[in-house]
Image 1 (spheres, helix red, strand yellow):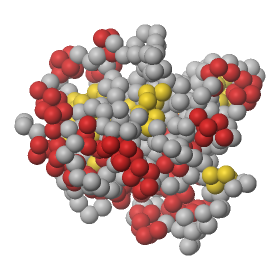
Image 2 (cartoon, one colour):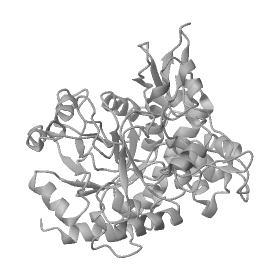
Image 3 (tube, helix red, strand yellow):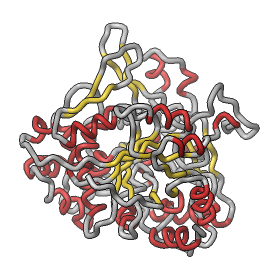
Image 4 (tube, one colour):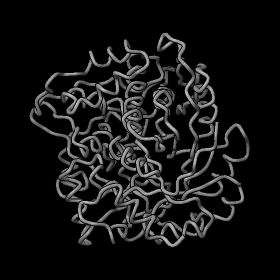
Length: 471
């Protein structure tokens, strides 16, 4: 494979659905790397279809899926001509698990194909897809779908993606591919996909995308780079101020007076050691300005990854009213973004933007019935009888305790799955008239807004950073 032109600017993969195909396509059309979020694309696509697929974009993408009968099965399960009413609950999708489930895998492959296909449509700019290592159960089928659509890059954070290079190698040859799954109280568990078995065809092997590992420390980068088996094609080095999840501080976590994690010298990345690995790298988290790009270039980086500036642009997947409120609060200096140590079921700190009517408010959180009906952040565990169960700290506390964990682990946990879907206008409507409230995240450094026009576009962000930097 020819070495692709390396982008200076990577548009961060923000899920669920904030980095959708419209945003990635707009960035890729400028020649920089547009990235779709691969998190929960199965439920996102299913709910778009149930809303009637406004504009026909999903159906246009599915018409190009290489195995029509698979796409037709997905359409038959979820498409509602004209769309369901706003007060009609969405039909559920199969939950992630270790047991094989053909319908679940078909939906994942088709959904990831559609999102990448739409992002790549009508231009020749580079497009990537972002996944979370934490959601291992989803990865093989999701990656395969993205590869079928020609994804140029795969970016993976929230963990150490040691098995992803081999996964990409296997899938690029249409070989059955598996990765290990962490199961509390057990080992030897895997999840995978057999391309020919799932699709019933021997398709032309897809091109292998480049892999960028998103890490927070030079020691992790060195660990991955030590062997051809685990070595990615580059790194994104992310600081703790980036939006969404961030790595916890090294060592025992301590909190400041405001209740946020304290990061110290041990958490600073030695960029000289990263550069010495000989692989390209990009810096993320507080670098989304012309000055940030200049600092990154001076440190030897290829460029920067930018999230929050794109989250607030016109092509963002955020519900427009929520996006407007976020931007107005950020521009006025009134927006508070906390690095909450307990909000996420993953156990990683998570940035929560304080916006009225969202899960950032304690009364909204307390009024929400605790349940876990999507389950992307569930973790498998071994039951006393040897069977596999699944648990999530955001599920009802008594349920979580019955599954062998202490109640204090569940305190203050937010349901990220439902909250992030509500933030893009796809929240569940429940019996009794209850609508899932949104949860919003953003980076803690909002200086990126300086110099950007009101209601800015993705192209405005790219031009502002690249033309304003003296490099």
